[in-house]
Amino acid sequence: MFGSLLQHQYEYTENPKEAELIVVNSCSFIEDAKKESIDMILSMSEFKKTGHLQKLVVAGCLAQRYQKDVESLFPEVDHFIGTGEYYKISSIVESQSRGNYSIPSYIHSYEAPRMNSMPSYTAYLKLTEGCDRRCAFCIIPKIRGKQKSQSIENLVLETKALVQNGVTELNLIGQDLTSYGTDLRDQRTNLEALLKELVKIKEMKWVRLLYCYPDHMTEEFLNLLRNEEKICKYIDMPLQHIEDEILKSMRRGVNSYKIRTIISRLRESIPGFVFRTSFIAGYPAETEEQFEKLYEFVKQEEFDHVGVFTYSQEEDTHAAALPQQLSQKVKLKRKERLMMLQSEISLKKHKAQVGHELEVLVEGWDEAKKLYQARSFGQAPDIDGNVFIEPWVSDPSPEIKLQPGQYCKVKVKKALPYDLIAQLT
Ligand code: SF4
Image (cartoon, rainbow, N blue to C red):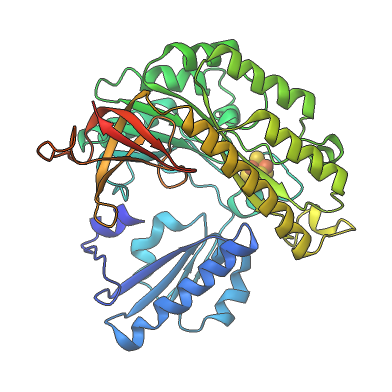
């Protein structure tokens, strides 16, 4: 949307007060995301009175999911654009068309105009749109449609264009990376084949995998992760739960044995492997015992990064109709217990890194902390913690100057629950 608008003579401003057109790219996969989107729509609509705003656009999943409802709920919005129509944004904002929805079938290609909204050295590369799985709690397949994969050739061309603009870190995304290419049914498009092409791009430094399903994991995939320097030894694999009855009710298609096998295969094959995962606390009918199994699992496995969501009852999903929905109080309590446990684990793991050397990607200067902010291969942008670097090599020595996008070696000095403090080596 960004690329398309810029190509059509729009200019970007960071300041919503100056903007004549504001696009709220909404989300609606859980209750909290809906609330955040609605708050943003309401606060942006104020700029019609206090700023220069002429047109307010709501794009994305909230628009797609609630079509007529949002149209009547937000009279101040000029255009709604669903998940299958976003590439038409430039013509939609010039038209009178208010509701713009279709069954999502669009997948962008490298030819579509793209403006990287991340800092110049990093980017997301979207491999797929939509999802062919049917997890009982999840509304995403209904709002984003069936899986549609980009071809390897397209993705390589898109990456080369990003690299030309300074990108050296690539974060691969999609609803389910593990299934990348299955919809093309051509026997040659898969994650392994794509990774092999991406690492050939000379200037690319780090390729990181987000959103992998705990499904099949080929030897070839493990070999690539182990041996290919440019592929971060990092995986984000949402596990959701570990108790078999709950996994069955979630319609995840995997059981605890399979999940444990995948984790041990990853850990045994790749020393120093960084594992991010997420869980749902308070799924319908989750008993205390079932939750304790999850708690013990998190304690035993000592993952590097864990996200916990309270179960969100989403209409039109299978799980929403299940009996024994738990109270918000129980869900929150369980979430907090898991988060508390994880912060102890995270601190322990960080303490073990003190004295060790790390390669980091510098992101900039944190004025409040008076430290440089950076990330290691094991820290994905926005979701994981940071490595903060002291602005001198040894105190008192002259201050060092680090540039965003620069890679450097540091030695870890201090551990915090979610961040590390380090010194340049
Ligand atoms: S794999 Fe992810 S996006 Fe697809 S249905 Fe399951 S939870 Fe939803």
